[in-house]
Length: 256
Image (cartoon, rainbow, N blue to C red; front, side, top):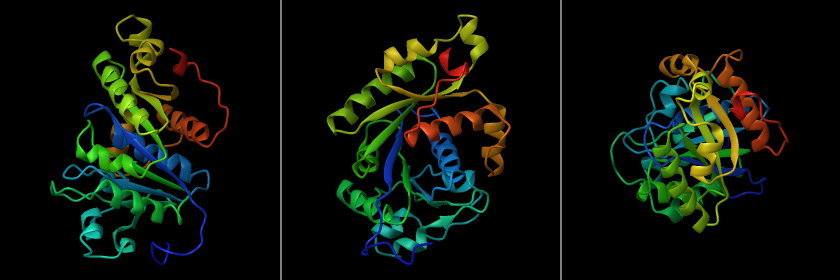
């Protein structure tokens, strides 16, 4: 753990924001899964829960009780280090929880400054943004240098992803698409849009696809990481490798 967040000469980690146009797309699942996949590759990862009033990353990563949260940092009720909680179930992953109340976290400038401070101590800082295009999204995106837009395989969510992508583009943030909860059998039966249709509607480059996998729901409900043998875990590994700049070919699932 870093002794403090502030001055000193350290490397600068990557700062990313995970967002979506509508609720229920799976932002927090993606944030937690990507964070754990990166940690398994030896990266030090900090996840920031930016969804005030609806926080979930602490429970998803096995953190029982959090005394301090993001709001306490910005209100100067604690030093930043006091609001960082290591995950007991995923080594090398830590979480800064969102407040349980609906208070505004901070100004975009304050969030950007804090994320840059954290990035001196972590290889990856990943912000779980509130869904939609409100003030919470503006604050969460302020400190990021890249974005991941999560969409389920339906046209409403994909169209909302396109709107989010345009807003990110205006900010100069490169954004990539993650399609979540794809069901290949329904795609093959013509009952669900295929990958090309979702990509065309979202108008974003694809970084990866996650299948509908009951192990995800079980892991989230029990506050533990995905078992390595499940399909979603393998997909998260591929997304993490692409995130790090590797050229990883799309698996059969990801071509549907």
